[in-house]
Image 1 (tube, rainbow, N blue to C red):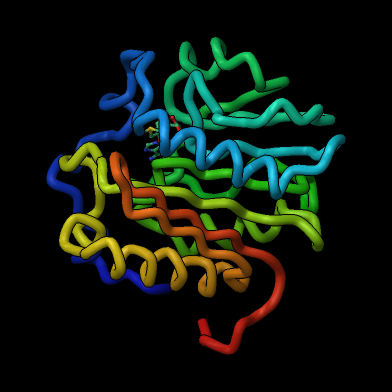
Image 2: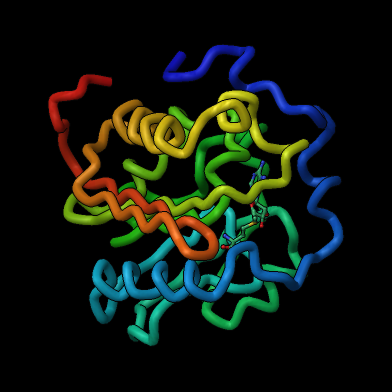
Length: 207
Ligand SMILES: C[S@@+](CC[C@H](N)C(=O)[O-])C[C@H]1O[C@@H](n2cnc3c(N)ncnc32)[C@H](O)[C@@H]1O
C-alpha cells in the first residue's frame, strides 16, 4: 500500500503518460543554479568507474565529468534518450504501469532521479526497485524543485508544501527499505533545490 492513498495518486490528466511525452522536449526543467548544485551533489556521490542508472531521464543528465563504467538511461521519450550523450544504453518504461525494472539486483552503484519524482503514482514499488538494483553500498539521489507539469503530478504532490514534499520523498525512501543519509536544501534565489540521498538501512522512522 505504501505512503499514498488512491486519492493521493490521482492526476488531473489520467491519460497514458507516454502520450504526454511523445514529443521530445529539448529544454531544461530547472535553472542553471539548480543544475549546477545537482552536478556538485552527483560529484560528491559518484566514484570513478561507477555504474549509474538515471531513472526518468531525458536528453540531459546533469552528471559531472566523472568517468563512469556504464550509464543506463530510462524515460518515456525515445528521441530524448537517444540524444543523451552520457548514456551507454537506455530503455523506455512507463513506471506508472510497470514498476519492475529490467535490471539485475545490485546492478548499479548510483540511481539518479532528477526533477521527476512528482509524477510517480506507485513510489513505494519504484523505490523498492531502486533499492534492489542499487549495490549494497550504493546510493539513490532524488532531486526536485517547485516546478512541475501540474496535470501530470500526483495530487499529494500538488497539494503539499515544499517541506511536506521532503517528508513525502522521505516516506518513499522508507517504503523502499532505505534510509535518508543526506538531505540538501537551498531555498533560492532562483529555483529552490531539494535533494535526498538514500542508502541502505533504516533510520528508525519506520516504513
Ligand atoms: C521534468 S522531466 C525531467 C527529465 C530529467 N530527469 C531532467 O532532469 O531533465 C520528467 C521526466 O520524467 C519522465 N516520466 C514522466 N512520467 C513517467 C512515467 N510514468 N514513467 C517513466 N518516466 C516518466 C519523462 O520521460 C520525463 O523525461
